[in-house]
Amino acid sequence: MSGLSLDPEQLDRYSRHIIMDEVGPEGQQRLLDSRILCLGAGGLGSPVIQYLAAAGVGTIGIADDDVVERSNLQRQVVHGESDIGRPKVDSAADFVAEQNPDVAVERHETRVTSENVEDLVAEYDVVVDGSDNFSTRYLVNDACTLAGVPFSHGAILKFEGQVTTFEAREESPCYRCIFPEAPPAGSVPSCAEAGVLGVLPGTVGCIQATEAVKLAMGYGETLDGRLVLYDAADMTFDTAEIRKNPNCPVCGENPDIGSVHDVEYTDTCAIGD
Amino acid sequence: MRWKLFANLAETAGEREVDVDVEAGATFRDALDALFETHPELREEVTDEEGNLRDHIRVLRNSQNPFVADAGYETTLEAGDELAMFPPVSGG
Image 1 (cartoon, rainbow over the protein chains, first blue to last red):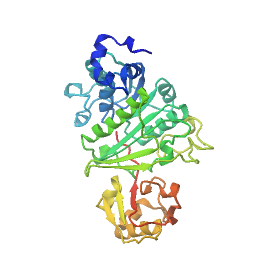
Image 2: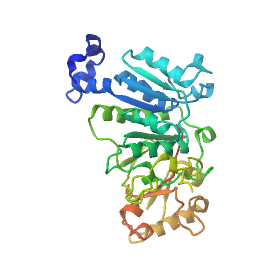
Image 3: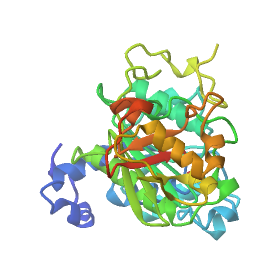
Image 4: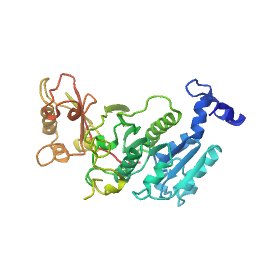
């Protein structure tokens, strides 16, 4: 890889990256060569897609099976009034095409399930989880951890967000090291039930995008081993240390989960009988 | 000592921060009991029939999980310890 492959328009477009010693033409080329999968083109996915596209991440996969609804527009900033009723992957892809012609979008207009998740994450260098339910989150954790694909986790509710990065290295913890199983149905409300401040996924999604860009460039320290608890209401960031759990069912010493097919991704996402 | 509560746990308690009357040398269990005395509705939400924390509820003492970094319920607390309790959230 060499900065010489950047054309004059790219040298101009990415000049504020290239001028930094920490990025330079090599770092920009790594971004252009990278493939990042955004799971969900909703509240979190919107700012992630925007900033990855602006940064020149060469290939962005977008997986979402929803269509744009008017109630999305309060926070899902890649979609607009005229997109209501359109698939979110199409609306998001149009946004990217307008923002940066260097970026190729791979549309996955599908629900991510245990049948397709392994093939999907294997195609990408980094995964950004902006999904909206526990089942998908545990599925993504298990698939990425088992495949060794680094991923960013972000989750939101009302005024609060939780965000971390799992690099899926030998010594990295995973989401099940924090929460071994999903909470019983009904014990933690969803955004549809409890609401969400419109700007909240902007903040949390931008942290996720930051982590994904750093992973793609190979620069800086990620949140691997730390969970940030962000509270927009009192504007505080608390950090919880996360250690790898030797008894973790996915990444522990004697894991019970060897593949996503070992788990029923319903209710508590526990190991099937 | 002060507890900080997150997400729906703060909603259940009706406040985000709860000061409890627990002295240095007390155990983590004492601090939990003191929290539940001021907010009995929280006890119902986060503990099981045996009075232990439910599997999806995480606690912190000075940013670390006392069940991983220390002696769990028997962890001895020090003056100025910051305690926290949070559930997972899933929205996107």
